[in-house]
Each structure stands twice: as C-alpha cells, then as structure tokens.
Length: 221
Image 1 (cartoon, rainbow, N blue to C red):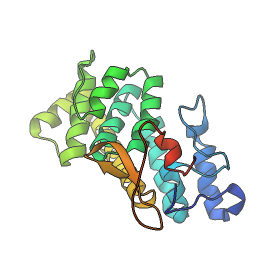
Image 2: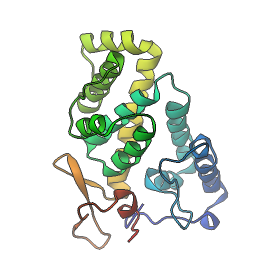
Image 3: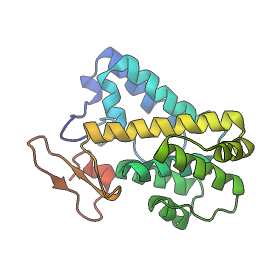
C-alpha cells in the first residue's frame, strides 16, 4: 500500500507469503483482460492484497473468498460491479471506486450509471432485477439489514443463493475498504470523493484533484 505498509517484492517473500502472492497474481484474477494492475512496477501487490501477506494463513483464504464472489457467483457481472461500487461509495473508498469503475465499464456499466452510484444514488436501470439488487446492496452497505419487503424482492430477483452471495460480496468489499483505511491510511472526505493519506511521520497529506488514487495509495509519484 503506501506509508503505513511497505510493499514486498517477490524475492522478499517467505514461502507462505509467496503462496498467497501466486494465488492472487496467477489465479482467476490474472486470467483474461486486466481492468487494473494487481502489482506495481516492482512486482509488489497493490491495494488491499498487500495486507493479506501479513497473515498468509488468513490472507490465502480471504483472497479465495474474493475470487469466489467474483468468478464463481450466480450474480451477473453488472450486478456484482454495481454492488461493489455501492460499497465503495458508502465507505468513501477511492481505491475501490477507481478499480471497480474500470471493471464496471468493461462489464457494460455506463458513466451515468456509475456516477449515480458514486453519489450514493440509484440510477435508472433498464433491468428491474439489477435495480432490486442495487437497492439491496445499498441497504446492506449502509444499514447492514434488509426489510421484509427488500428481502422478498431480492429473493425474487436473485434467488436465495444470489442473495447469499450478494451479502458475502458486500461484506468482503467492506472488509477491503476497512483494510485500505487502516493500512493505506485512506480517509473519506464527506463520505465520498477525494481521500487523504496519513504519512507515517504524522500530519495529513491530501490527494490533489485528478491524481489517480490507484497510484497515490502506493506512493507512485
């Protein structure tokens, strides 16, 4: 990540850490087109993946949950990315937002749809089931619960398996957003928009307008 947690190059990893590294960089995330880089120019893991190296037994299983909800889910690609962006908006996580707006765009989300989610709103969606899923994801991210009406609508739209996977997805990306706050010093501004990094020496470093968070959070100048 950045000042709070230094990145580790592949030759600096223990055998256990290397297993986590290979699972992330050589698993399903590495297959096919890449919407955002998993490693930086030195080969260090980017974003919350870097923190997973701190505890290889836990990190290995955490990354496996993430791979499962992204690549082995009954949720459509658009529903998955809408839900992730709802979590990013609630937590004010610019890293998650930038990464998954890139993925979402590749999955067919429009700039207008993503802008509405970024602002904490519900865009007009042609597919009614997508709207139900996004409302459920937003409710889970913001309140941690569904009303009976929201539950019934989500089960009708997604099925019980789909709703279960949606709750796991929301929880997983909320966990990553928390790790970005702790280990990358990411701080939301008014819940949305620009974030701040807290240098190891203390004080506050505010990201300048337009500077890519995917680079800023790793100290790339």
